[in-house]
Length: 443
Ligand code: URA
Image 1: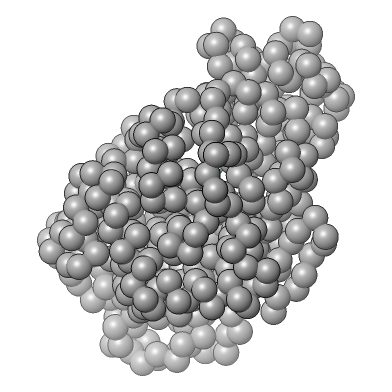
Image 2 (image 1 turned 180 degrees about the horizontal axis):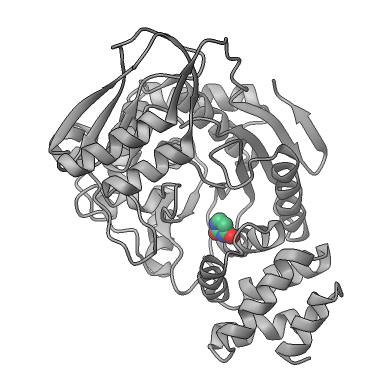
């Protein structure tokens, strides 16, 4: 089938055979396809969707377009986690060393922030010297030694996905459940995993604001994992407001170090430890989630998780003193300005999209992949939906590089934090747990 045949087939609601998807991804990675035709196919997929067979074939084609991280020789379980992205979502940074310190290998392959969402790689790179680009052979060595590497998708892993993702970003076709599922899983299946935990965000600040869509996304990725014999557990988690207090880049590293020292905001701690427990069960250290939770807490309390983070930072070229004196090591904002409540009332919403866009407007995020970011800027939002507040009370700190950046931050918070008269019942942080066995309501 020519690419034109594929476009017409999808346009008319047909099913493209597996071998045609494999040739498509091979040619995509070879750079021999015209962008305008691939874009037309993407738009047809966006409107028509893909069958389960097609999603699997696309995922397998993208996986086969590159290399894999070969970790089967490690004597421990190998488990990664993926979040569909949000604001203040810094879970991976403390999670990876906690799980590694408990005896499960974590080949953590993360992404960069785009639009309103932050990216783990950008946050990590706010640690002076920290390198997230690493050849697969070096990542393997680090995983053998420390059971953890915190890296980005290199050109070696699923190159067809990189090309397709850039075109999706430029053509308004990112928000397609089969395309997201095939994209994420093509990279995860290249990590020789024995298990995967998905944090599927739902709510105002997520890619999938509707619960039904988030459930479908989770089921689709779980099915893709099952076809490759990788057990996948998905947690549906609330992104109606930012996670934790710090939102930005360097300040999120500081909050992650706090968590590794046994502190940090309660919501961040709960989600990180719960996710760690799921990973430990999948990695084979514990038979029950309760036992795994105790083990994960123990790794924080004993200092083993912080020590592992220190070793990972040093191994990846970063300044390990970030674990002892984060503010002395991380880039600091020129200005810190309190943001106060304009009236008495109850906090109705802390709108994550507006917060995320505010960080970008302040210089801490990017609109296109080519943009540089200022890691020092962001917010520390201490109020939560449901809080009763008085006029003049401090709700957040704006961390800015200059007056214009501070004003952009203030304008964003004025829009994001809504105060009203009515009581508010926030949704639970973790609402559903999904496996091939079904959907469990957590709260
Ligand atoms: N992250 C990915 O890697 N791919 C997507 O399509 C969306 C989020």
